[in-house]
Image (cartoon, rainbow, N blue to C red):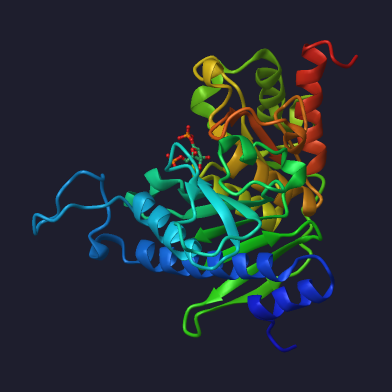
Length: 338
Ligand code: AFP
């Protein structure tokens, strides 16, 4: 079969009425920016971009952390196209407006430019996560409050994993699709259409070093997984933890599994570790569109009414039956179900 490029796929999606021309352009621009981020991360130590921002390289020039560079790449790429009303990023306290004199569009873009950035220096996969919302009608200078829309209103969500291969996973609410970057040609090529995550799994991802801080239902649930074949679950479970959410989620999108970043005593006052608007919501959209589930352990992530641009939430996502069981244990402990 003839390979389908991202551009051809976007044309198909427009013809099917799933997206308009402006959203198609937005995705093209984000994908192009991510190719540049992939090139920057791929240079490793040779790019002079590893280490902490605020340090100097051997020539005495200021070094920029790759997450700062990735943020700048995405901002710069998106300022011009006329497809955005504003963007918001993990790297910036407030939304970034489109500069005066540039054309504006109807969309709001949120992103985590380089998730898992603490893994860069050790050459482990990192990624970009993004979410697209519609700018409320009549708003010309969107502020944080205009971004505070539930995940169910997302028009698009995606991530790019910069690993052995650079891979884009995308949804417009009509299935989840994967594109692999052909590095010689410079194009993202459709590699999996309509991804389905198996409902059951025997693989879970969690940072076990936080175990003593977890709440009782999480202790119970993971305790049962660890008990394996002789425990109440009657089967052995395997564990993985990359500590780059994009890489952990991509494994789940590829072979199933579950990912948990629960609330624990250390992060109780923050509400969780991961950010709702540009980590949890887009990942939840991608996972649900692939037949999986995504909750906070208590509620569906995409139904949360956001209260802040950088709000944090607990995240349970992946194979449906496992996420439902872990969520059931929490709701049962809360007295919400019997
Ligand atoms: P960094 O971008 O600071 O590396 O954080 C990545 C992350 O938010 C997410 O990608 C991982 O799942 C999670 O942190 C790992 O957190 P722990 O280090 O607490 O396991």
